[in-house]
Image (tube, rainbow, N blue to C red; front, top):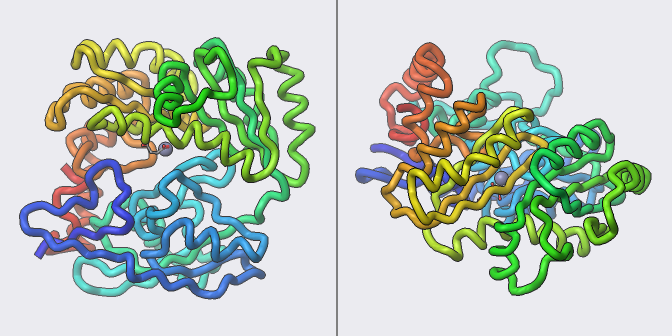
Length: 389
Ligand code: MLT
Ligand code: ZN
């Protein structure tokens, strides 16, 4: 019987959608939180723990989890491991794979594998099974427990909005801020999409008139103010092109503008999601041509572009075409490959992008993935139809 592991069901590539009589394995009941190991800055939690429950569990110890994302109240740790989720702070802490020290998983054979659940930082004893299962989208094993690295909670955080003339200017700002030790996030937003978010939230954006391009820069640490002042002075932007929020509630208010982008797209209708990475030099040319590429394949469609600029990770959302119309997604992914990017940055392959895996990774790499799959799941019961073409 085919098994489809499911956590918070917040995935965006149909990787947890059952087909053809498959059985859903709902992992949300595995939500046990073990005591925080403060000396090691680590914790072990059940796969069904939500990101928010994990954050609340470790916060009293002055510790945080390095991955954060908008779906925090329902996304589960197991699903985040399975998809190697990225989110808002990859530039500072890396994606999910960088936080996972060890895990327990049930393979397709029914065998239970425990890989470094003790959280040893150095353990060079053979293949990195935890790293392999991370990002395997439930095709090699079902994750049941995870040992996670934690980070010190920054004493202070500042969120800065910068209104800029173009994406090319935003990439220049990125080059200036990248080396700052307090850098925590750099997110991209654009005027046409912000206008949709304004309508969705029913309030005006803090910078008016809407700048063509907006960067949300978060700085965090013992004292991020000098970095902020230096950046603002260096850029020499007029006052109406910058806004600063200090402290948690104000910072969360600024973040709401970025986090409401997917909601604003969903309010327009069915969304075709393209989560892609571009090399730094390809970001501005890609954003400059993606709308025309979508328009050519699906005239009249609405295209939103936003994302985690520091990681080269853009989210292209297309609204208008029917659910089974693959042309807009194909047009976007073709453009991505033409610019030397990746067809999946942080959401995974799932069912939605299976056909693109060969183009992205090549025959030999996909053949090696198939060999791994048949070794760990010889009967092919784990999430068939996901990831591998
Ligand atoms: C985001 O960064 O907002 C998420 O990856 C979700 C999305 O693009 O819909
Ligand atoms: Zn994202």
